[in-house]
Length: 595
Image (tube, rainbow, N blue to C red):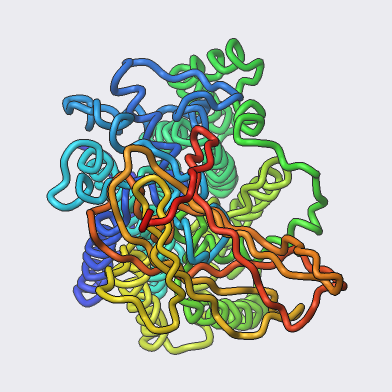
C-alpha cells in the first residue's frame, strides 16, 4: 500500500470545480503565451535554451566561460536538473538550424528599457521560418516551453493544496491563492518559457506542501524521505531551491517537539536529508569546486553575467529599482523591453493595499497561543519569503538582476499573505471575484500586448503630403523620404520624432541605420544633440529579409541628451541619416536613387 504523503482537507464539489476551472484557464493562457511569443523573446530564454541544446548535443554539462564566448555561458553554472530533463525532450530532433538560421542577435536591442518603440526584440528573427506550423528550432523551443508549462501548472495546483492546508475551513482562500498565481501575467509568461525557474518553483512549492503535511498530519518516515527527496530536486533545479531545506527542517523540528518524539528522530531525519543531498547532488558541488573554486558556482556566474559597477547600497537599490522589480513580478515582458498595460500595476497595487490593511487587522486577532499555534504555517511562509527576498537583494547588489520574478519560488508565501488580507476584508464569495480583472488582463496581454510588440507594421502604397522626398540608396536599401515632427522641442520635452520611409530591396548583409540630430548655436555652429541606431522597421525586420518594392514607414523618437545653453531657439534641427554594416563596422556610401 502506498502511504498518503499529503493529506488535504476534503473539498466540496463546488470548490473542486472552481479549482479545475482555474487550472484549465491557466493552461490555456500558457499555451496562448507560448504560441504568440517569438522564440527567445521572454526573460532569459535566450540564455537558458542554449544550455539545453548543448546537453542534448554533447551529452555533457557545459563549462561556463566568464568571457561569454559561447551562447550557453550565461547559465552554464546553474544546477543541471531542468536542463538535463529538457534536453531529453529535444535530443531526438535535428537541431542544426539553431545557430545557422535562428541565432542572430540584435545589436541594438533595448534590453531593460521598458516600452521602447524600437528594438524590443533581442534577436533578429526570420519570420517566415518561424511562422506556424513550426519546424526546427521554433518547434524545439516550444516543446521545452510545453514542458515548463506542465511544471508551472503543477505549481498552480499545489498552491490550492497549500491553501487548504493553511485554512481547512476556508476553501475560498485556497481558490483565491490559486487564482492570484494562475492569473499573474508574468507568472504565465515565465511558466510558458524555457526557464529553470519553473522547475525550482514547482519543487519548492511541493516541498512546502509536504512540510505542512508533516506539521498538520504527523511525522512519518515516508513523508520525511519524500520531503528530503523533493528538497534535493529543488536544489538541483536552481540554487534558490536550497531554501526548501529550511522550511522542511523547521517543520520537522516543530513536529518532533509537538508530538514529543525522541530527539533521535530529529537527528535521523537530518541524516536522511544529508545522505540524499550528498548522494544525489554532491558530485555537482565537487565539479564546481574543481572548475570554478566555488562549490555553488554562484560567484563565478555573477562574474560571467557581469558585476554591478559601480556598487550601490541596499537603500539605493530599493529606492531606484523598486518599481522595475515590481513590474517584473506582474508584467515585465520581453527582456524587460515592454510591459503589461499600466492598469495592471494600479490594480495589483490596490490589491496589495487591501491585503496590508486586512493582514494588519487579522494579526490583531491572534491573541491566544492556541490560535497562534494554528498559524505556524503562515509564520513559516513569512520566514521563507524573508529569506527569499534577502537572497534576491543580495544577488541584485552583486549583479544587476532586481527582477520580481525571482521571487516565484516563494510565490506560495506571497499569495498566501495577499489572499489572507483580502479575504479578511471581503466576504469569501466576493474575495475570489477580485481576481477576475487579473484574468482579463492576462488574456489581454496574450492576445494584444505581446503579439503587438513584435508585429510588423503594414506597408504603405503612397507617401503622405508632409514627407520630404530625398530618394537616396544605401547598398540596395532605398530611403524615399523623411518627415520631421513640427512639435516645438524644449528643454522640458527634449524629444524629436522623425519618420523614415523605406523602399525595400533585399540585401546580402543586415544593415543598420543611424540618425543624428544637430542644432545651431547662437554663433551659427552645428552641435550634435542626439543619436539613435537601429535596424529598420522598428528593429523587427532585417534588410536580408526584405521583400522587394514595399514601402515601410517608421517613426523614431530621438532623445536630445546633449543640450547646450547657447542653442539658437526655437530649434531648427538638421538631420544626418546613414546606414552601416554594424558587424563589420563599415559605413555604407549613400548615393542618389536617380543616379
